[in-house]
Length: 345
Ligand code: FES
Image 1 (cartoon, helix red, strand yellow):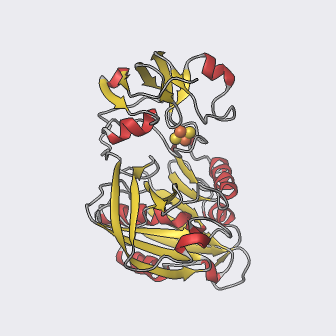
Image 2: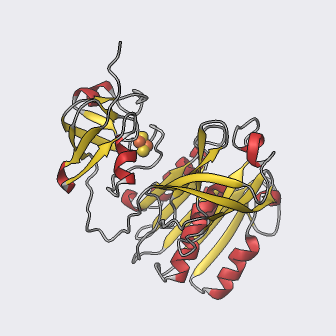
């Protein structure tokens, strides 16, 4: 018979902060809810960005796969913060260094409730969901929330598309997944304006929270536009970058949305360029894969930075293209989503 799960204290050594991990709660969730920032991205056990080194105590690795956490890493005392839960009191340190004085605002993870105020079809198989929250949620541009699918015990991740100045009205772009519990089973089926929803956030560390000296290229595939829209609106409103180039890739015109909004931003901000790209339709705009259009536009990306969000294939191709054009790897920020899985955003 296994021992009953109980709460344990966890100390983050280099930060000199402690939290109490509830029974069955992941180390990462306990830290984020107690305003202790640890590096993380997917919270699903797939990216590996939440690795921690256990300095003393014992953890249950739970759903950690060998793909994300190798047997050698386990033997060396490494654990995935988003999966592991303590089996005893713990002392640990994040593998990726945390600088509490880096100037990036950090916002604690909280549960929220709100009301659906907009649910519109905006592109092929894409809906805009806007939720008016009962209590505001502070977040950084590029972060995401987990929306609970009622009656299923399941939550799905969607990036906020609105800028962080709008803390009470969150906008999400939802792409339909055939047979998906959250989409075909709910957001594209029974959900309607006026209904109540539950969500938790903010999560993730993708985004542009601070001003930067170099121009930035934003590359989106499909609903990967959501976090980049938040970043673009925030960066332009606060003059965070000298130049901003937004690329949005789709197959045909049916896949584009918010075109007028971005064209208005182009007129208002001489340092902003917007380029929608279609790979399966000839039109008077850019034609081809979005990453090929970027390659054609930039002979050198040295001294620039990039933020990519979309399906893994697009993100991989984008990263390769940017490196070919000499962009420094540390200047390439990426967020992937899997269209047909639980990690859609
Ligand atoms: S593996 Fe833990 S945040 Fe991605």
